[in-house]
Length: 440
Image 1 (spheres, rainbow, N blue to C red):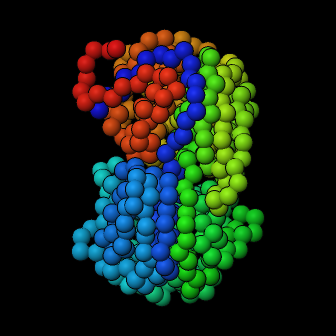
Image 2 (tube, rainbow, N blue to C red; image 1 turned 120 degrees about the vertical axis):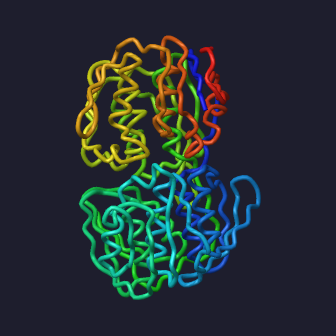
């Protein structure tokens, strides 16, 4: 797919974004592990989250789609999954693979987790090694570090204390999910705070979770209870709107019902530190914190981004690099080497594509140095099949001097279905086409 972007004179109106991807994955998995029936509203019907539903269905979990974004899931309990008759295809979703590895490690059945070509190159050792130390039998390519992953489930896993070398919500969650069925207590300690959606949802569904600073502990034998989960809008999706509204003149709009969990609001903190005119109106109820975010045009200033805030905005760094391109002065983004093992090497690819369009960007081992204020050109660029790269480039195009053509843009649906129509409702001109043609 080709995505065409026209420069914009500003965005105005009120809009909502699709449900949070991280929360949607966890809602489906915890509902499947639970006791009783759970209704989920606001579920993100992206390719990644639908892959999780397909895998759960193959494991014998009854799932009923009530309406767009609304699902009813009948919990199977801790031992109720059936052995799948086929491999479990996670598509492009690393979250699906890593979280299900934790779940399946304690299910008394054999299973194989695989995915597309990109997912099969992504490192899985960080989740496999702690699970194997608990007694899990997980085998994979490249000395058990790459998918496909073959898992022989066991009810004899032993709870342990795990000290993670890198803060990772996916690894933490996989260990916790295994710990729900392991013997004794399972404790995970991180070097910095990562997103805590699993902890919040477990507590919401009645599972005791002991949180002590950067450590979280669960006890084996505890089961989530059925309930009603409302998924807020995804702040990672809202980030593209926030950056666009900040850099485009005459912008004034509100993004409604966005998740504002403190472990995910690093992007708001950073944009405000750069001078963005963002105001947040919290809303009550629903378990996860949520609110409305008003965005108005502003003059951004370059800053340094690094340290403990990085785990709270790792997915937003590509679009923050775009914000830096429009800021006065220099922005340094560091401590983000994890970007090299996403759907593509986002550090290298963003450096190449932004430089092609006139951005003064220097690639670093763990991030970028961006000197703002350069002329942003139109022309052709490539998203390299990475949804976050594609959408970041689209925001750059909205603030550029000429039309932009983004090739390899098919992946947008991984996390933000309706990306173009959402921006269109605020007055932007983005168009998806099946094949290349002349620029608009």
